[in-house]
Image (tube, rainbow, N blue to C red; front, side, top):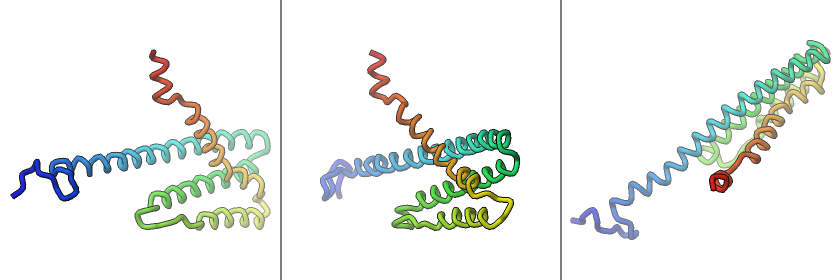
Length: 155
């Protein structure tokens, strides 16, 4: 019978194996926590940006155009949610992303082109609001000080 201190065939002691498994699991859990936080932050940013731009469009161009913009903004939010759900499944049940999300955008743009009350440009610009929120987040993240910068400023 082997003692706990004896090594396995791979050269790792029996006591060390659970710790190794835990160290692999911790970054995955941490990464998913960060990803969930990122999703929440982006959803809030998109909603806030959409509502602010909706109000500005309403003041400048009227309610009809503002509602067209809002339709596009909601479509962009749904699109990003669909994308994030696919990303979560990537590697677990799927090997690649599909482009079903583009069907949603195509339907909304075709609808805007066919229905006389809807205008294509405000709907499309509303859809692009999610990209503006992503750009703002990326600039904010890139300009944030790193741990190395913070330690240098402490000196």
